[in-house]
Length: 280
Ligand SMILES: [Zn+2]
Image (cartoon, rainbow, N blue to C red; front, side, top):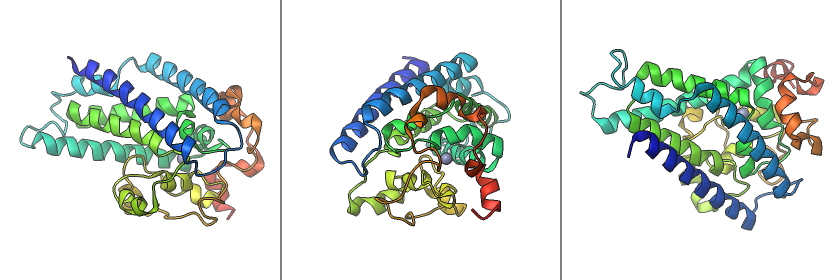
């Protein structure tokens, strides 16, 4: 079986199993009451995910594995040196690609024009497993592009790239669960992986909390670069998620989600940087 077959097979199996697992978990043990029924949210977010995936795949026509295979023999890559054990190179690859996700996510919050795109993800008035699919096509294209560039430059091992992809796919659904780990598990797990309680803080309506917890797979980058926040000011049950001014049904429209970056910005919803400068 080729690497491409292993990639697509393992990715889609993990995608379906993780989605169903988290969906069942949050159905039986929901952390917070949703303002719109899940069946309405899931259908709309699935449509946005499908549009983003079709556009991104249609544009690039390659997967991270294919890019990694193409550059495997690069003379300039730092992660294809045979004197470094494969397992070490794989671990470094997962860490590097997770750091890229952290950096691009932070960039989406720091630059006004990137925030216009990323706010589609944050304008979800609720937070559940389907929020993971609510990502604008431009964000998918830019994030994937940064990923490809880093793979091309560092020439990491294919197995490491696959491991990073699978971990990220798992975290995407797990991190957006409308559920919490049991109290005894939350702290130890949070030392290693981003948990739903940790990522939910990033979706807070409070801008200062949106500037926290950017991490995708590991929480270490947030701790290292001092963007970690352990708990929201209002508490997990009472905190508001989403963006001010978008707590309504219209925020769930597929047309709205795809056009939001191009709409005139509402005053109260100007970029996080502008708002932080104003002390809001
Ligand atoms: Zn964000």
